[in-house]
Image 1 (tube, rainbow, N blue to C red):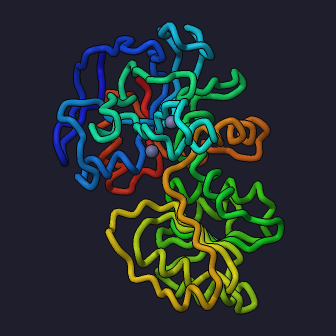
Image 2: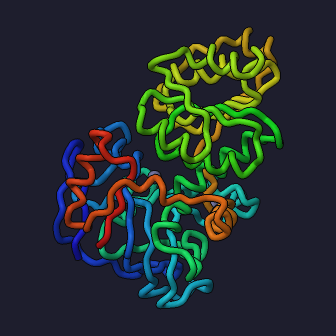
Length: 347
Ligand SMILES: [Zn+2]
Ligand SMILES: [Zn+2]
């Protein structure tokens, strides 16, 4: 089959790769009809995340058709259309049985290297999904691939952090970072009936998209976002701030933009080992700091797909490019240069 292959840090190729076969009774083989390039694929290419095996398939966001199932698979049959989770859970451990799939003892990630299961990814014609009963979800026939594909990763990430932030009806909410996760967080926050949502970023095109979706844009290259959020909230600060960037200065902005007694929920991915937390200040202002960790896909994909089906969320607005799989490397180049918001690949 044809696949996008990680060869080394900074080097992807496109070429032939052995077709996956069933290895365990819980496996399913899926013929991929749509895959997407994710910002976390770039972490592998930049070498920020170690462990990717040279000449292995990358990618963890996909929709496709089940073409083979192992003897333990009970929820899916050959021919069914499914979306896959980036997080590949065991479905049996203490955490999984409590519904905290993102804390699973196994914690594998599709197409993400030998420290997280050493599984081949989905930017290919076929993919093997272990423990298919828990890591695939049926896609309603009324939904297109494009409407469903993000339910296995960034759309549920938005739903997950919106839930962790415990937004109440009428709250003012600020979001830092209008990338794909920030925009999907915005869409999920809007389903919680906030009074306003402020979106902080420095890229004009991203802010414009956020505004179309329903946010009040704040361009941090032109104004101090903390001062601006205070000005817009009677000098209090936002009730809830959701940090979607994943760098220390964005966290500082988020802490300063929250009102006393407010919440700062963090879903941006941090690779720094430490951060100078202004402890006394955070304590004095009684901030609730909610660290998101990995998204709990399996707990949220059903209800995010309901939001999509019932028209409350349109995830397709973030898709900027749709390319054939054999043009994937071009897609990565555009994504890397930030010329593409989200690239969809069609095997
Ligand atoms: Zn992803
Ligand atoms: Zn588990």
